[in-house]
Picture 1 (cartoon, rainbow, N blue to C red):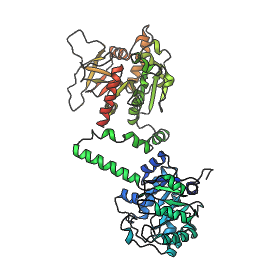
Picture 2 (cartoon, rainbow, N blue to C red):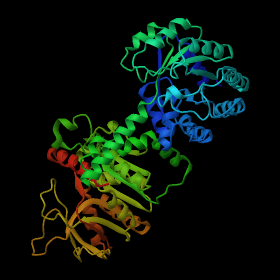
Picture 3 (tube, rainbow, N blue to C red):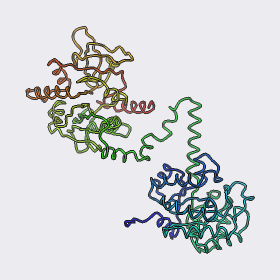
Picture 4 (cartoon, one colour):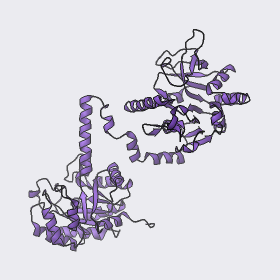
Length: 547
């Protein structure tokens, strides 16, 4: 096993521990992962819960192959041992032999079988009328399972139902002794009483001859110290994950139905990113980078060199782009937007406190002159990372995902994003007013509009601006060459350190090149001051609720 303790050995160690141990029910991959994340040493794959998640009764209506298939998903996403609630073994000794072999193939640590007749009925349903299996026949099933296992520490737990079925303590002890002699690794004694009296009596008579397991579903209020004092080895919390999920789903579904809206439940339920995390989305993202060619032909350059002096103490120890918005740095949100569009080649031009940028999956280029230069110097620092299809963007932007998706599809050698909806809105920072040959007509089909000029000031003439540039520019192969030439020309000017991206855009226009305009109508925000922090939080919450 390459010096790694097997799951089977881990379960055996739990059963034979000198301390009282606990395992929790799970019924699918995501619940199993949550059980492990909570800190439990093992998982109880409950027959009731597994049946319930299929929507069928706990009476062997789900076939053993369906159960085993689900167990494979559960063991794939966990590292702790799984003990299967194997009902009656799904048949006679021959079914038991095959079951053990199949469980070992899926790295299941053990199986618990109960001494009732097949098909089983849940212990809490008409338990007084439930017939028990013949002792010798059940012992033969245990022996067949033990003879079939190829992993020495695979565990078979024999569950005694005599107390549940009303057969009395003597019958329970007699059966437990026979099952232990047949090779059971542990005995599970079950009770439907609301107090633990008969379980504790059984334990006292049993005298710790082998590990004793209990399921205190009915006598749940008993302090667990009582079980420890009674030499119980293992407590199984047997059905609480499935019950919790049903409670939550029922409540949420009723509220959504009644309100015909999800706005009131959004803050009560897990975020989508939590699901992605439990599914291992980050690992797949890393694997995509390793094994697949990029799904997008575009790269991105994010300009994030400034401190953002307006934020005072908030940016004392980190750059503006690393400000947290609802717990996530601005730059993290921006890179996530690009990656979700398949743009994985991302270069961040950093400056102030550049060492504090710890975003995975990006390259960092440093503008050493960040405190004495402007945006164009930062862009020039990244010239060696230029590609034939490239998006240049400010590092303080937030926007709805569709904006980037549509922008990538927009045509033009050089294209900029212009918001036509907020020309006169009070937006922080210095606005970049845009003048175009066609104003946005809000038509269903994209206009073929060209940029004429971009300025921080409105024109002195009566011409009204067509919108505001939001700080997003895109070039293709031809546009990249135009951009390279313009940068080279401007870099020789004495005032180069003072120049901005709008200066670059205007220089390209003055050289007779065409720049296309991609119109949007709001749904973006740049973070320039303290007031914008609150606006950004509201923007993120609103965007999430409409996704």
